[in-house]
Image (tube, rainbow, N blue to C red; front, top):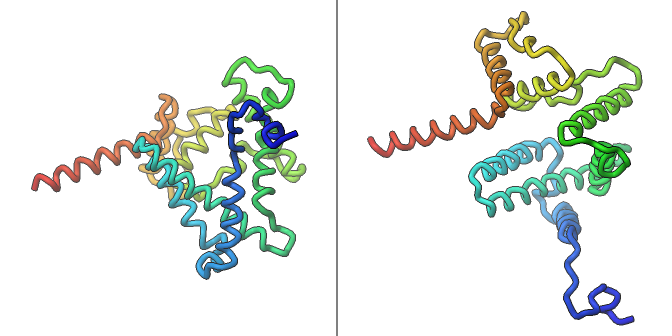
Length: 237
């Protein structure tokens, strides 16, 4: 059997490149950087954290601009952060280490588990039922992780350190899926340190979601429009 037959291209047509091969090269490059670059060698999870946030925001900006070349570049920068963090974790010797394959294995297992209508024999009627199944599976996962040590909450796993607007939106989204009454968001906070303005902002986020809008994207669009007006004013002085 000749080389073309083994490649499945006996008709003379070139075989298609295997997707993902460049990811393996990226892992190898990261290994080399970690070992040979003084700056890369000294980085930690903590020192890299700001870059992960920065690159994520830059990706969101690129998506908003519609510049696909910029989106492609920024996605690469985010991917680098994932590979970098996995490489740092690989060096730990306290039993908590993992590598890029462990990271990939975790998300593969999660996607497979949460899509029984794709990887199992479950039949769904549409995207709404997919969402319900996803939430149900996540709830079961939270209960399993708690090990019976406490009643799991629909809010478990929400990163409380994220920007306040996106935090409020995620909390409201989680609560809605769990059947929490929507009016709870409009009630007085009744907690020290919460101003009337803060409560009004939460209620406004709740209203945006009720109208099918993403409050983060809406405020970002308004902020961009304001920035344009400021620049126009500056140019006209």
